[in-house]
Length: 223
Image 1 (cartoon, rainbow, N blue to C red):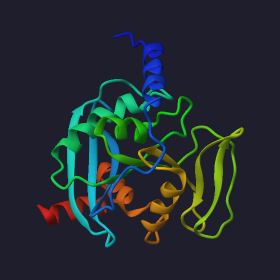
Image 2: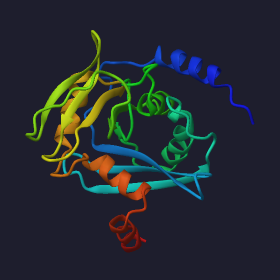
Image 3: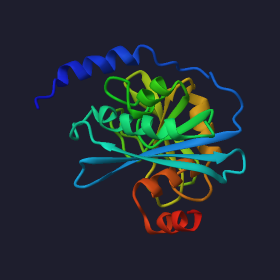
């Protein structure tokens, strides 16, 4: 199969025009996390949505969806690979959160449509991108103290924030996904930290999506 990557990039540009960079969500009762892993040498996508109570940040629900991976890894087009699985997991969620933290980029993307923005648009939910690495924007490093941050800029345009969430850990790259502004994105991530590098919603989603031992044991206890 020959992929029309030019068409996919144009779709990103078209979708990015609909991203809302202002707060449009109610005060949350639940806050979500989203991440994706892969099985069978990448042919199966394992997408996870977690739901935590707010402000307790206790796990209320999580759902896993396994779907055929629609396309190979192509830099800059990751959302087309991951969003179908996330939407399948989202459809299974009973306690729909008002805000979802997504392991990946929001608008901090060459065409301003990372997986958090793409998912937010399709699910019609407020989202924040919480990425472990920088995709685009200027390379800046915040101070070592936890909660130190700097704006993530691309020239004169702000894309998000670079946040030191934990001492002696690499920073996170926070960017609005959809229906949220810059300051709120940073605030929600900071308020969701509990001593780990990742905020709790994506920490749980990352652990389940990655099939890590602790979360496998947790799943066994729940089931």
